Image 1: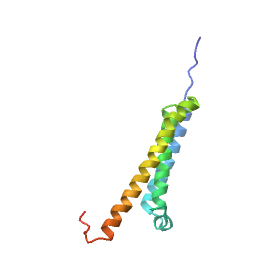
Image 2 (image 1 turned 90 degrees about the vertical axis):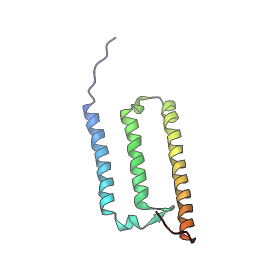
Image 3 (image 1 turned 180 degrees about the vertical axis):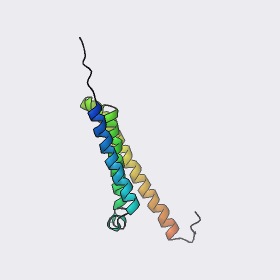
Image 4 (image 1 turned 90 degrees about the horizontal axis):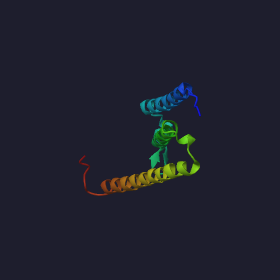
Length: 116
């Protein structure tokens, strides 16, 4: 039984290009900070931060998908790897937003001064 070597050069360049475009969009948005996104709040954060979170999660997922060869695995293994990560990321976001809002409220509505 012999296996033919298949070149993945085209796939590697596609992944590189896609991740480069997403990173470039993130950098451009971070530099120009459009007012429509920066000063519009949604679920406790401005839309610009939501865009950064979504694009970063997309990049992390795509890196796992492409470079760790998850696309070739069975659905059960894909779910076993991806589902806990999605849950943990959403849980971490919830904790950070909840605790951050609480700390902000404590400092905003009390006599304690901002000392940091």
